[in-house]
Length: 112
Image (cartoon, rainbow, N blue to C red; front, side, top):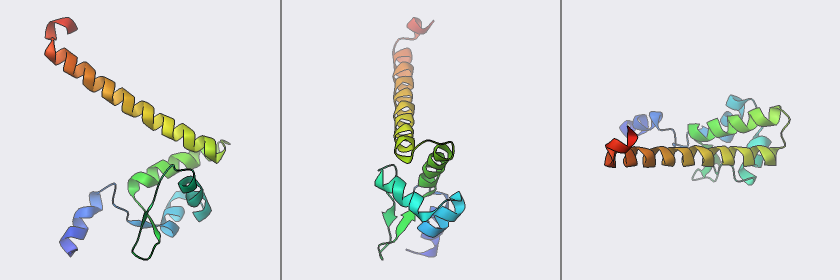
């Protein structure tokens, strides 16, 4: 990978740029918390060539949401399930909106 390739990845939300230690520091949590949400299958960190966990910005946002719920008293397993359900609901709403737009464009008089 060249330096130009590396710079291009800076804006990639899915690029695993953060080590476990740095991710925990950024979230104000422990590495154990990150391991726990990984074990609950909320996020699956990528592994470096040496086998170390690496996290993307997208994964850090999910982890931050989990931490928010846990800080409010939600058990970690329940917090992970809530986030998964929130994600599924958001995806279903996006699909429904796409279908609605397709139906309206196919039959513009029905929308009026």
